[in-house]
Image (cartoon, rainbow, N blue to C red):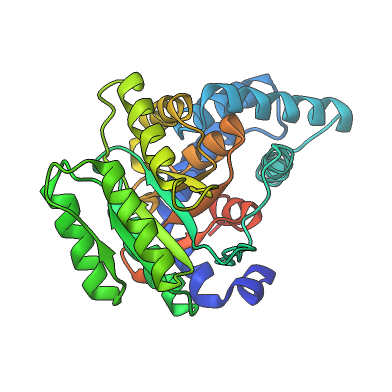
Length: 321
């Protein structure tokens, strides 16, 4: 059994391997064509690799960094065989991600606040990225760890969003705070944190409207939600988690850019990686935004929202089958 399977648990590592299978297979299919007949890594191989990384949605800026690192490695080592390329690529991407000032998230260890207030996670992201499902799965996992969780249905503009969160509330046995459709989201946020505090809850998971109508309106709306929550819990929210759909590739970069300009995003969850060959987007987003990726979605199951770990992700993405 590999070191990763020992540390993570065999089932979780196998789920991650399977979830990244399309990305992995697509990458190595292209790589094998790039190095066929080549005995060493030369300029032609590096040009091919650059194109492969960009088409794997790693992103142009991050791809350039990776290629430059490999060029330095080839120049230093004088001769690098093409059969060594995948190992070197893995090492350099791991090194790049380790340097981007984001630490691996330590599990579901929600901090206990000194005054006993609940830890408030405000979840943001456009409609359709898997935001509500991420909240539901996170609620299930936190409750399984013995945490008392309260949900807030702050996306009051879409009946489907509220209904979906109610279903997750019933499925997980976690209480929900909601208001009538069209209510002020800030009012829902206020009621949610007030209720959670009164109940002695450990964690609040607050959904918000998934609209990118324009940055000014979004900024104003999220700022108002924060101000209102702070009347109850002065330092809320403790985490602003942006959910991105990994299967959208470069569109996920654009959404990350829009939201980080509109509010102070402190963590990322990247979903739907199991149905796409665009898993490289995780590498690019982690590198470009210097915001910790806390969770990745690699399947439909309750436990398939996994804690992101750089080393295990790189191992699965570049694993030769």
